Image 1 (cartoon, rainbow, N blue to C red):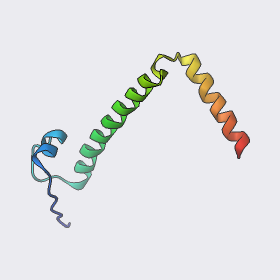
Image 2: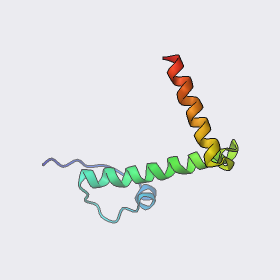
Image 3: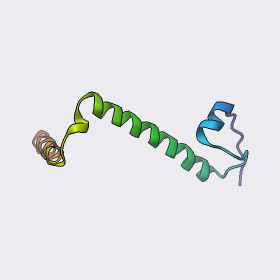
Length: 76
């Protein structure tokens, strides 16, 4: 096994909830991936609210998805 040193700010340590200075790479990837997923979800919610998509019913969403899939098939 190899060791890699990574410099990270105090703010990032707090942001990612890091409690140790030693992590296996897969654990660090999981922690960072979770935070990035949260950020993207928050961004998606904000965009949905901005463009009125958050008010769509499931039926409207289904129709929109079907229309986009149909359009994509005709383009290829």
